[in-house]
Length: 175
Image (cartoon, rainbow, N blue to C red):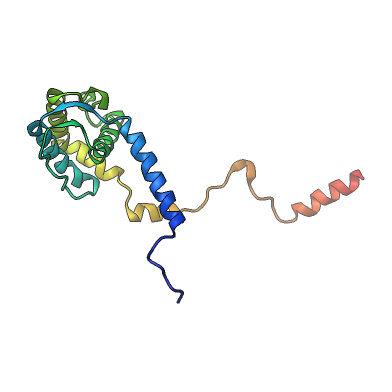
């Protein structure tokens, strides 16, 4: 059995850190900025911790201790994940368009409260919960996809036995 080194090579760590920094930068572009008081923020945190288990995550995002001028990157990531699923559910006619939100609209306590209300209604929506459970890939579903027989392309069907000889005869006749 080969020796398994649990530490990553420095080059791999640098690459991983570079990817994480680029991802943080991208998420930072959507990072809401404004004046956010602790109480409305914690109301939003309460709704996100209710939504997290629907995504297979532990509902343990920490409450805010202070007022904020921008939302933390990790929190923005959660909100963006929720937004994407809500938008997907809207496209599938599972929930109303009123349930969606844009990160740019989150600028003050009022918009935080509105967002908390929207997430609260989504987390209570049985159709949304069903949509998430049906759209989540399961190990069995992924295994079925991998073991599925390749379908035959009508334009690329295999030639019948002996056809190779016939084609060779045709080409030889032309020479």
